[in-house]
Length: 333
Image 1 (cartoon, rainbow, N blue to C red):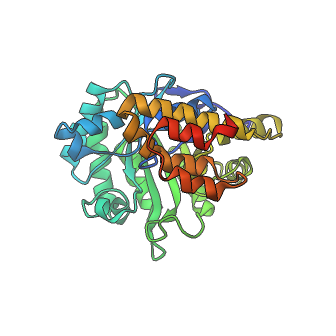
Image 2: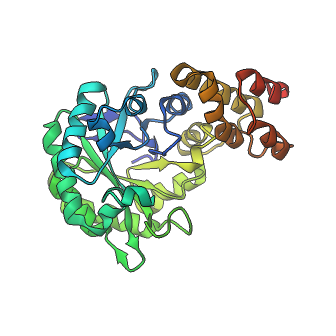
């Protein structure tokens, strides 16, 4: 099979296998829209609290909104209570047109873990089973349910195999693994050997039945990384996270590299223009002041590698209006 290829998640057909991961504070519909424009085949919302959803939190509804150019997208939910997660899944179906619901079993942040959610689920595969089963039963086959988890809690508690077993038994349509443990956070190296083992494990467990795809996450920062992950691990798709921040053209370049073996560099002006399109979309959703403050970290990312980037970033972190940004990047517009 070609490295760049279609993917099937339950009854959902995707044209390619380059995905945007759910990134807290980043994967709103403005950023997802730009990534889609640049060639992302599928994207996940940032994680949505099941507790907030069931309490009718308005901000949570904004997190789940579809980008206008998304052919398909997934809403990722998190929580530690199976009944609340089931109710949250029903609300996702009621209030969005998402084609997939993903369950977060990977977030390493302490406040999430305290609620018995995120990476806490890697410590307790039985609870992971209860959470995923409750969501699968709640959606009644209307959309596929997927799960993302880490390789384990720490180096002494590598539990990806038990988590995969629990996920498969609960009826997931796909599994994503980030090759780091909860203890690693985003430091050290992602364990691609574990990813490779997971691919084999899932294939063996599901032999003779419907294929359950496995997606890889962790240390995919370049087209070359994506190619190596696909070749070395056998995952069905690559999920870009931090690598895509301020760099949505990572999807454009990776698709070109996987299909043609070449990489066309993107002019600086084109990168900055993408940043302004993202800012425009943010303004539509949250207003100019909030959008411009939110865009500070994003333009800092877009400006990486630019000559005089450090000086630019000093100005970026004080920007309050679209006009401020236009002055800062005047020479690139």
